[in-house]
Length: 465
Ligand code: ATP
Ligand code: MN
Image (cartoon, rainbow, N blue to C red):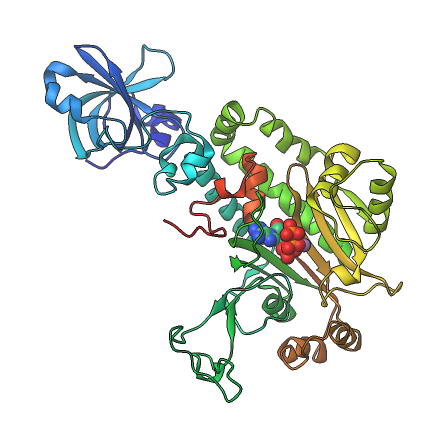
């Protein structure tokens, strides 16, 4: 018999019909009961809720019941009935039970509830079986789906930018080298340096830190594109907000200036949050009840306000006048740290902030230069609990100014020659931004550590599982 998923049983009970014989397949969460009847809570991953299976012990025999342990996979066929117990509306009276896979009670690590997040990280292969990770992974899926829907509905095209790149010019972070050379026996040139002409691509290549430069090439043809793919940074930042491998969403829009870019970023992130509230409320309610009592209020509060828009220079004044002692000193020209970003958002404004017009020296070469000669049309979207969630800018479309910025940074014009062609042929005002998918999930789930919103985190010293 084909299984009915639990989410459907609970949401469409009337359509299925009380009294109907159905089949459920899933994993045992708990078994309790007495000598005559066992109550087995089964979860199949389709929802945070379990379905209760009522088992007549005489009918199946003690030996079989003993195999129905926490973690085991079972297939149950039986009649759907209204439940008399509390905690569930319906349950299944078991007619047939098949034990699909045993789980040894001595060794299965998820016997009890209430494991620490640190412990669960050490069993990343099994943690999806917890309620917590079930919620996170369903929300992760929902957010990915919402992102595609948002852009598709608005005429953006999904552009696949390469993961292996020879451009290390973007300067967004340290990169991972990609090579097919034999590391035990490297070919050397006459100066004793590694001879990359012998390598697979004939030159050094890395894993991409951002799809943006390729994204711009797409936008200058299709008008509006977005990328949604993995990016990699070899920075040794062991923080709760950084991963070595993370997914990034990077829309790029021709004919959009910074204002349009800010409007898009704000509308987009609000769309994602309302999508979660509308479509994954059960998951959010669970996380709200057991992990973060303010989660749902916080999500709703974002939807209720217009984001503050403020220049970097104004932000620096606010931070200096705050009289706060920050770990990192505040001065015009210095990059903002998470503590500064969070002060602005959580203490000063108490709502999300979009900071613009950053000093050019702390931002990338491609950002549109302002007339003051000191700042660029960057925009960072700052969120409570997170700090920077989005980084973006209007791009410099003027070839001469872009070349000057490249020279100032001693970067290679040769390496950027294809990128520069977008300014040589039919250049236009354009803008875009990057949203870290993990940061979005951190916010939507209310979790404190980015390692706990990704199925298999990649961080310094950790590529297990
Ligand atoms: P931060 O200052 O927080 O390190 P960044 O300025 O290096 O971020 P960008 O290069 O602007 O980040 O990348 C765009 C977005 O990608 C960021 O706003 C953030 O959401 C996300 N992001 C950046 N680095 C990481 C990382 N190591 N792990 C997860 N997400 C990241
Ligand atoms: Mn940034």
